[in-house]
Length: 287
Ligand code: DGL
Image 1: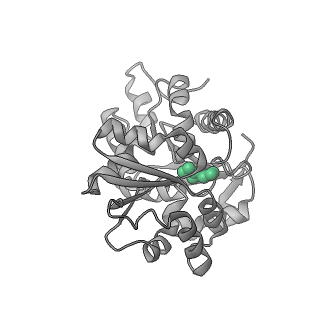
Image 2: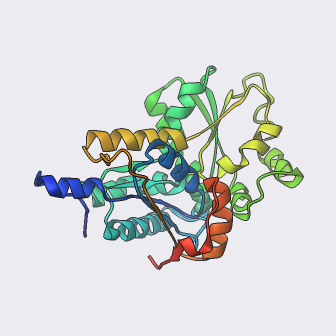
Image 3: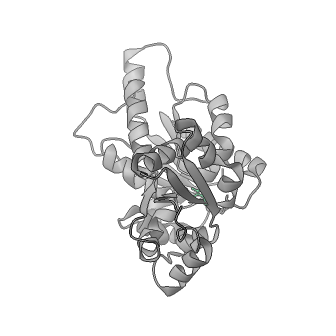
């Protein structure tokens, strides 16, 4: 096992470590919404992003399979030399965060669940929060538990919306069909007197559906996701570990890896990243 961290206090080793990229992974292109926020918050940092597109979706797989996939993704990134790891996938974070932390005790690892829970609690007024996520994340009760750890008074409703992942991966983010599917999943959830005032997007694929969700949801419902709060958590963690890149004028790079379909990754990924992405920028690897 290679962990790109030094514990000997050696000055040049520590400097070299600060210049290593941050590893980020997801089952597909969804985690690019988190990468986007990370790049905005930490422009001087470099990133290596891995989308496990060959095995997407994770949300319908058993927790055992997701732990195995996440472990393989993490090992691939660690072997390339990273200073921190971001699990930009709620399904993988809910199933595999403790396993990865146990495997790489020296590596700062940040998942998206705790930051997502914090984001929702920061905006809710009624303390009633609806979470939409994959089947795996909902079955694990990941957000129910994470929110309860932060505030026992919050009431959490979790709804699995697995088809949203397929819509997002297809690049179908707007229009009648998307809105009908949203209604099919969410109708009734916001129509009672005790309805939630906050919708937490508990899947990193879902932020691209935000404007379609906005069209369907009542005006008073605030939509939040974990991208910004995750970026903030990563920045804090790097700062506290002395791992922030100190060359403030540097413009960090991104290396894109996927396990299948470079052209599709680039085409759909550009929607998630909010900037053009060329097929030639995506390397296909086996994990
Ligand atoms: N983007 C992932 C998440 O945040 C998972 C989507 C999937 O592979 O099912 O949960």
